[in-house]
Image (cartoon, rainbow, N blue to C red; front, side):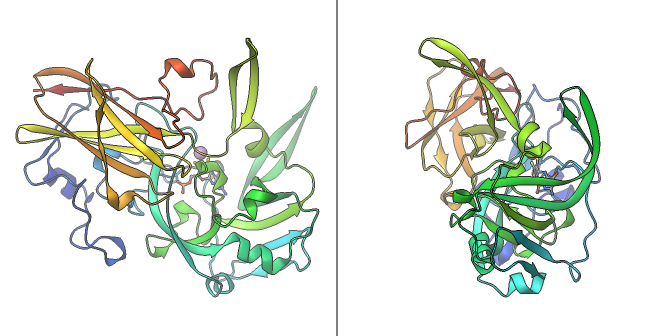
Length: 386
Ligand SMILES: Nc1nc2c(c(=O)[nH]1)N[C@H]1C(S)=C(S)[C@@H](COP(=O)(O)O)O[C@H]1N2
Ligand SMILES: [Mo]
């Protein structure tokens, strides 16, 4: 990125919502670039961003304009493309270890208890240099618990499997054999999590029906968990006793890391579940004599204690969390005012600490994590001050 964007460029690109924001709330002003404020380019970004594909899109975090990500910018990714679902013909099946199997239309779901929740998530593969696989929205839907209660969960239901309508051919390896089978995208939650108050079946994003990209007409939303748990185009909830070991549950979304146990390294493979504590700097802008730093915090909903910014070899300085984003599962936006920036290249980095005392790790501290998912390391960004 070697061009300088002005607010006008951003507006021309259709990146700012004029006047009232989503849901008719007054547009959030703090993170938007003010008149005359210019974006300072990061010098360590690739020259070109991946162009959005029909079904893939990264959020350009430099253009974050408010707490909620507009529907046409919300990042999107999935494994089998977008299935076509006619909302009028849509039925959500609930079966397996339930007393009363269900087949629910969109109207049935809309007629049930309605809840709203602001929740952000990121793909567990979100990482430097772009950090573009993250977004935040206000979701509307029905508590998963309400649907499960209506079906009557049997006592021996331990594993709750969520299938999307999307499917594809998969080679399943077994020892020396390979079997090709057609599989639906599936993910499971343990009983305790599925029956918790937060997970919801969401049918609206920022007050409008879900788009195809975000899983129309209904998706599972598991607040505080990485993207993959949030099954889109949800078609079937199946309750079983044994563990679900589908590809995207048991194999593709795992982390291999070495942990020191009693003085020895033990290699541990774990499933991707809740989000790891993370922050990153989304943009730096120049406003008169000062520079403004805008950043993003993502985690599993554990309250945040502080977020700090460090310039070059300076000391950590406190940044300010925007109160408009300070609900439990929302991503949090933070700002930091950088004064006295001298011409030349500088490195800026942020780190977040939660109330349990957990501190966002450095990349060095994560060296024992071999696989690339769940990279919540501190992310130094380089800028050139003219
Ligand atoms: N049905 C279905 N749901 C899915 C996926 C998928 O491939 N199929 N991909 C998951 C992954 S890996 C991510 S990161 C999120 C992305 O959600 P988004 O496109 O709304 O940003 O969807 C999740 N839900
Ligand atoms: Mo993902």
